[in-house]
Length: 285
Image 1: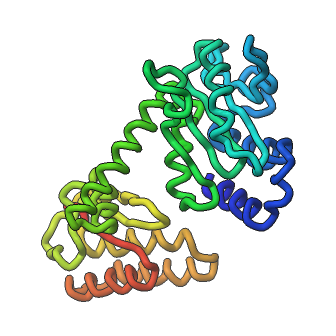
Image 2 (image 1 turned 120 degrees about the vertical axis):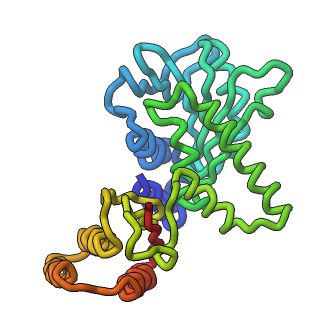
Protein backbone atom coordinates (compact mmCIF):
# COMPACT_ATOMS: atom_id res chain seq x y z
CA UNK A 1 0.00 0.00 0.00
CA UNK A 2 2.89 2.37 0.65
CA UNK A 3 3.68 2.59 -3.07
CA UNK A 4 0.07 3.53 -3.83
CA UNK A 5 0.16 6.31 -1.24
CA UNK A 6 3.49 7.61 -2.57
CA UNK A 7 2.11 7.56 -6.11
CA UNK A 8 -0.96 9.54 -5.03
CA UNK A 9 1.25 12.02 -3.19
CA UNK A 10 3.20 12.57 -6.42
CA UNK A 11 -0.02 13.06 -8.39
CA UNK A 12 -1.34 15.64 -5.93
CA UNK A 13 1.95 17.54 -5.88
CA UNK A 14 2.81 17.40 -9.58
CA UNK A 15 -0.61 17.39 -11.25
CA UNK A 16 -2.68 19.36 -8.79
CA UNK A 17 -4.56 21.20 -11.56
CA UNK A 18 -6.10 17.91 -12.74
CA UNK A 19 -7.98 17.52 -9.45
CA UNK A 20 -8.86 21.15 -8.73
CA UNK A 21 -12.24 21.08 -10.51
CA UNK A 22 -12.56 17.44 -11.55
CA UNK A 23 -14.36 15.34 -8.97
CA UNK A 24 -14.35 12.30 -11.25
CA UNK A 25 -10.54 12.39 -11.44
CA UNK A 26 -10.42 12.42 -7.63
CA UNK A 27 -12.68 9.37 -7.55
CA UNK A 28 -10.89 7.37 -10.24
CA UNK A 29 -7.27 8.27 -9.49
CA UNK A 30 -7.30 8.61 -5.72
CA UNK A 31 -10.33 7.30 -3.84
CA UNK A 32 -10.86 4.05 -5.73
CA UNK A 33 -7.16 3.03 -5.74
CA UNK A 34 -7.02 3.60 -1.99
CA UNK A 35 -10.19 1.56 -1.43
CA UNK A 36 -8.74 -1.23 -3.56
CA UNK A 37 -5.54 -1.24 -1.49
CA UNK A 38 -7.71 -1.53 1.64
CA UNK A 39 -9.21 -4.79 0.38
CA UNK A 40 -12.42 -3.54 -1.24
CA UNK A 41 -13.42 -4.95 -4.64
CA UNK A 42 -14.01 -1.66 -6.40
CA UNK A 43 -15.50 -3.32 -9.50
CA UNK A 44 -18.03 -5.31 -7.48
CA UNK A 45 -21.26 -3.39 -6.72
CA UNK A 46 -21.89 -5.83 -3.90
CA UNK A 47 -18.93 -4.22 -2.10
CA UNK A 48 -18.41 -0.72 -3.53
CA UNK A 49 -21.63 0.74 -4.89
CA UNK A 50 -21.58 4.16 -6.61
CA UNK A 51 -24.44 6.66 -6.34
CA UNK A 52 -26.14 4.90 -3.45
CA UNK A 53 -29.61 6.31 -2.95
CA UNK A 54 -30.90 7.50 0.43
CA UNK A 55 -33.91 9.59 1.32
CA UNK A 56 -31.47 12.51 1.82
CA UNK A 57 -29.91 12.18 -1.63
CA UNK A 58 -27.27 10.06 -3.31
CA UNK A 59 -23.97 9.23 -1.65
CA UNK A 60 -21.03 8.93 -4.03
CA UNK A 61 -20.15 5.48 -2.70
CA UNK A 62 -21.49 2.95 -0.24
CA UNK A 63 -19.17 0.33 1.21
CA UNK A 64 -21.05 -2.91 1.64
CA UNK A 65 -20.13 -5.95 3.69
CA UNK A 66 -22.24 -9.08 4.12
CA UNK A 67 -25.07 -7.34 2.28
CA UNK A 68 -25.11 -4.38 4.65
CA UNK A 69 -23.94 -0.79 4.09
CA UNK A 70 -21.14 -0.19 6.59
CA UNK A 71 -19.89 3.23 5.40
CA UNK A 72 -20.78 6.08 3.06
CA UNK A 73 -18.20 8.06 1.09
CA UNK A 74 -18.71 11.56 -0.24
CA UNK A 75 -16.18 12.75 -2.84
CA UNK A 76 -15.31 16.33 -3.75
CA UNK A 77 -12.82 17.95 -6.06
CA UNK A 78 -9.60 19.38 -4.67
CA UNK A 79 -10.90 22.95 -4.57
CA UNK A 80 -13.64 22.04 -2.07
CA UNK A 81 -13.08 22.02 1.68
CA UNK A 82 -14.31 18.53 2.66
CA UNK A 83 -15.54 19.86 6.00
CA UNK A 84 -18.38 21.57 4.11
CA UNK A 85 -19.71 18.15 3.07
CA UNK A 86 -19.79 16.64 6.55
CA UNK A 87 -23.35 17.76 7.30
CA UNK A 88 -24.73 16.14 4.14
CA UNK A 89 -22.70 12.99 4.72
CA UNK A 90 -24.04 12.74 8.27
CA UNK A 91 -27.59 12.89 6.89
CA UNK A 92 -26.91 9.94 4.59
CA UNK A 93 -25.49 7.96 7.49
CA UNK A 94 -28.30 8.84 9.89
CA UNK A 95 -30.95 8.00 7.31
CA UNK A 96 -29.55 4.51 6.72
CA UNK A 97 -28.28 3.77 10.24
CA UNK A 98 -24.65 3.74 9.11
CA UNK A 99 -22.04 4.58 11.75
CA UNK A 100 -19.04 5.45 9.56
CA UNK A 101 -18.88 8.35 7.14
CA UNK A 102 -15.95 9.37 4.94
CA UNK A 103 -15.54 12.56 2.96
CA UNK A 104 -12.52 13.35 0.79
CA UNK A 105 -11.33 15.84 -1.78
CA UNK A 106 -8.46 13.52 -2.63
CA UNK A 107 -5.94 15.26 -0.44
CA UNK A 108 -7.84 15.54 2.84
CA UNK A 109 -9.84 12.62 4.22
CA UNK A 110 -12.26 13.07 7.10
CA UNK A 111 -13.65 10.10 9.02
CA UNK A 112 -16.92 10.91 10.72
CA UNK A 113 -18.70 9.23 13.60
CA UNK A 114 -22.29 9.46 12.43
CA UNK A 115 -23.99 9.09 15.82
CA UNK A 116 -22.93 11.02 18.90
CA UNK A 117 -25.65 12.67 20.99
CA UNK A 118 -25.10 16.31 21.82
CA UNK A 119 -22.56 16.95 19.06
CA UNK A 120 -23.08 18.67 15.75
CA UNK A 121 -21.94 16.85 12.62
CA UNK A 122 -18.81 19.02 12.24
CA UNK A 123 -17.73 18.06 15.76
CA UNK A 124 -18.05 14.35 15.02
CA UNK A 125 -15.04 14.29 12.69
CA UNK A 126 -12.76 11.92 14.60
CA UNK A 127 -9.86 11.62 12.16
CA UNK A 128 -8.31 13.94 9.60
CA UNK A 129 -5.77 12.62 7.10
CA UNK A 130 -3.70 14.89 4.86
CA UNK A 131 -2.31 12.78 2.02
CA UNK A 132 0.20 15.46 0.99
CA UNK A 133 1.53 16.61 4.35
CA UNK A 134 1.67 13.40 6.39
CA UNK A 135 4.30 10.65 6.06
CA UNK A 136 3.07 7.61 4.09
CA UNK A 137 3.59 5.33 7.10
CA UNK A 138 1.27 7.45 9.24
CA UNK A 139 -1.32 7.70 6.45
CA UNK A 140 -1.36 3.92 6.07
CA UNK A 141 -2.02 3.36 9.79
CA UNK A 142 -4.83 5.93 9.88
CA UNK A 143 -6.47 4.61 6.70
CA UNK A 144 -6.14 1.03 7.92
CA UNK A 145 -9.29 1.47 10.01
CA UNK A 146 -11.19 1.44 6.69
CA UNK A 147 -9.90 -1.97 5.65
CA UNK A 148 -12.66 -4.34 4.69
CA UNK A 149 -11.83 -6.71 7.56
CA UNK A 150 -11.71 -3.86 10.10
CA UNK A 151 -14.44 -1.47 9.01
CA UNK A 152 -16.75 -2.45 11.87
CA UNK A 153 -14.04 -1.30 14.30
CA UNK A 154 -13.18 1.90 12.38
CA UNK A 155 -14.50 4.32 15.01
CA UNK A 156 -12.82 2.46 17.86
CA UNK A 157 -9.48 2.35 15.99
CA UNK A 158 -9.67 6.09 15.29
CA UNK A 159 -10.36 6.83 18.94
CA UNK A 160 -7.39 4.69 20.05
CA UNK A 161 -5.10 6.46 17.57
CA UNK A 162 -6.33 9.85 18.81
CA UNK A 163 -5.58 8.78 22.38
CA UNK A 164 -2.12 7.64 21.29
CA UNK A 165 -1.42 11.00 19.63
CA UNK A 166 -2.53 12.87 22.75
CA UNK A 167 -0.40 10.69 25.03
CA UNK A 168 2.67 11.16 22.82
CA UNK A 169 2.19 14.92 23.14
CA UNK A 170 1.98 14.54 26.92
CA UNK A 171 5.19 12.48 27.00
CA UNK A 172 6.95 15.13 24.90
CA UNK A 173 5.81 17.74 27.42
CA UNK A 174 7.62 15.69 30.08
CA UNK A 175 10.81 15.95 28.03
CA UNK A 176 10.72 12.49 26.40
CA UNK A 177 11.77 12.77 22.77
CA UNK A 178 9.69 11.59 19.82
CA UNK A 179 12.49 9.22 18.88
CA UNK A 180 12.45 7.58 22.30
CA UNK A 181 8.66 7.26 22.19
CA UNK A 182 8.85 5.74 18.70
CA UNK A 183 11.47 3.20 19.81
CA UNK A 184 9.36 2.35 22.85
CA UNK A 185 6.33 1.64 20.66
CA UNK A 186 8.33 -0.35 18.14
CA UNK A 187 9.74 -2.61 20.82
CA UNK A 188 6.59 -3.19 22.89
CA UNK A 189 6.28 -6.79 21.69
CA UNK A 190 10.00 -7.57 22.04
CA UNK A 191 11.09 -9.48 25.14
CA UNK A 192 14.51 -10.61 26.33
CA UNK A 193 16.30 -9.05 23.38
CA UNK A 194 19.48 -7.00 23.64
CA UNK A 195 22.00 -5.15 21.47
CA UNK A 196 24.71 -7.47 20.07
CA UNK A 197 27.45 -5.91 22.22
CA UNK A 198 25.66 -7.10 25.38
CA UNK A 199 25.57 -10.70 24.12
CA UNK A 200 28.07 -13.33 25.21
CA UNK A 201 29.36 -16.22 23.05
CA UNK A 202 27.99 -18.70 25.59
CA UNK A 203 24.44 -17.32 25.38
CA UNK A 204 21.75 -19.62 23.99
CA UNK A 205 20.22 -17.47 21.28
CA UNK A 206 16.60 -18.07 20.26
CA UNK A 207 16.35 -15.49 17.51
CA UNK A 208 17.34 -12.18 15.96
CA UNK A 209 15.19 -9.06 15.70
CA UNK A 210 15.99 -6.84 12.71
CA UNK A 211 14.54 -3.37 12.25
CA UNK A 212 14.44 -3.07 8.47
CA UNK A 213 12.28 -1.03 6.11
CA UNK A 214 10.29 0.53 8.93
CA UNK A 215 9.38 -2.58 10.92
CA UNK A 216 10.82 -5.20 13.23
CA UNK A 217 11.27 -8.67 11.76
CA UNK A 218 12.08 -11.79 13.74
CA UNK A 219 14.35 -14.62 12.61
CA UNK A 220 14.04 -17.69 14.87
CA UNK A 221 17.31 -19.44 15.76
CA UNK A 222 16.30 -22.05 18.38
CA UNK A 223 19.22 -22.77 20.73
CA UNK A 224 21.64 -21.12 18.32
CA UNK A 225 24.90 -19.33 18.84
CA UNK A 226 26.05 -15.79 18.17
CA UNK A 227 27.67 -17.06 14.97
CA UNK A 228 24.33 -18.57 13.89
CA UNK A 229 22.74 -15.16 14.48
CA UNK A 230 25.33 -13.50 12.22
CA UNK A 231 24.75 -16.04 9.45
CA UNK A 232 20.95 -15.71 9.72
CA UNK A 233 21.28 -11.93 9.50
CA UNK A 234 23.49 -12.18 6.40
CA UNK A 235 21.14 -14.69 4.78
CA UNK A 236 18.13 -12.46 5.44
CA UNK A 237 19.78 -9.36 3.97
CA UNK A 238 20.99 -11.29 0.91
CA UNK A 239 17.37 -11.57 -0.24
CA UNK A 240 17.44 -7.82 -0.90
CA UNK A 241 20.53 -7.98 -3.12
CA UNK A 242 20.99 -8.87 -6.78
CA UNK A 243 21.94 -12.41 -7.83
CA UNK A 244 25.68 -11.78 -8.01
CA UNK A 245 25.77 -10.21 -4.55
CA UNK A 246 23.72 -13.11 -3.14
CA UNK A 247 26.34 -15.56 -4.41
CA UNK A 248 29.10 -13.58 -2.69
CA UNK A 249 27.17 -13.51 0.59
CA UNK A 250 26.41 -17.21 0.34
CA UNK A 251 30.12 -18.00 -0.01
CA UNK A 252 30.88 -15.73 2.95
CA UNK A 253 28.30 -17.54 5.08
CA UNK A 254 29.79 -20.91 4.15
CA UNK A 255 33.28 -19.70 5.12
CA UNK A 256 32.04 -18.28 8.43
CA UNK A 257 30.29 -21.56 9.25
CA UNK A 258 33.62 -23.45 9.03
CA UNK A 259 35.71 -20.95 10.97
CA UNK A 260 36.24 -20.54 14.69
CA UNK A 261 35.50 -16.82 15.13
CA UNK A 262 35.70 -15.03 18.44
CA UNK A 263 32.58 -13.50 19.97
CA UNK A 264 34.15 -10.05 19.80
CA UNK A 265 34.76 -10.42 16.06
CA UNK A 266 31.20 -11.62 15.45
CA UNK A 267 29.78 -8.67 17.35
CA UNK A 268 32.02 -6.30 15.38
CA UNK A 269 30.75 -7.82 12.12
CA UNK A 270 27.11 -7.45 13.18
CA UNK A 271 27.69 -3.81 14.19
CA UNK A 272 29.38 -3.15 10.84
CA UNK A 273 26.40 -4.62 9.00
CA UNK A 274 24.04 -2.46 11.08
CA UNK A 275 25.94 0.66 10.05
CA UNK A 276 26.34 -0.30 6.39
CA UNK A 277 22.71 -1.36 5.87
CA UNK A 278 21.20 1.26 8.21
CA UNK A 279 19.39 -1.37 10.27
CA UNK A 280 19.01 -2.19 13.95
CA UNK A 281 19.72 -5.66 15.37
CA UNK A 282 18.71 -7.17 18.69
CA UNK A 283 19.71 -10.61 19.92
CA UNK A 284 16.89 -12.61 21.54
CA UNK A 285 17.80 -14.98 24.38
